[in-house]
Length: 104
Image 1 (spheres, rainbow, N blue to C red):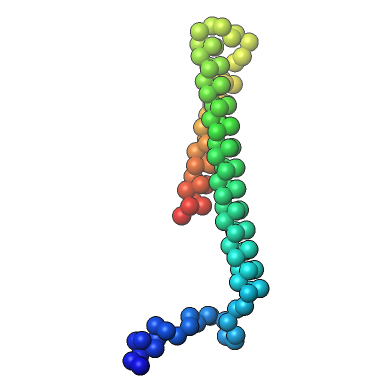
Image 2 (image 1 turned 90 degrees about the horizontal axis):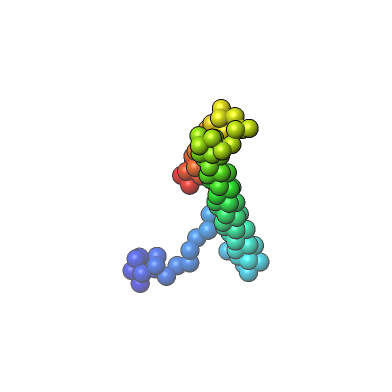
């Protein structure tokens, strides 16, 4: 048998010296992979939920600013609304940046 054929038919070597992993070790490895992937999926889901909630609040603040400009909401301060808009924009940008850093 040639060397290439012998290399292709030999078993995969594992970095851990000793016997190859058995059924229990493979099962536990699979559980760890599923756990890690579930955590990533849940993290993405929570990030999208938080971003949508902040975007909704930002839209509400823009509506409030429109009512102030139109003269329908005199009791709310324009400076306060502008501060909230700036804060929400910064928070959304920070979330997007954090998500990009996690993906990289």
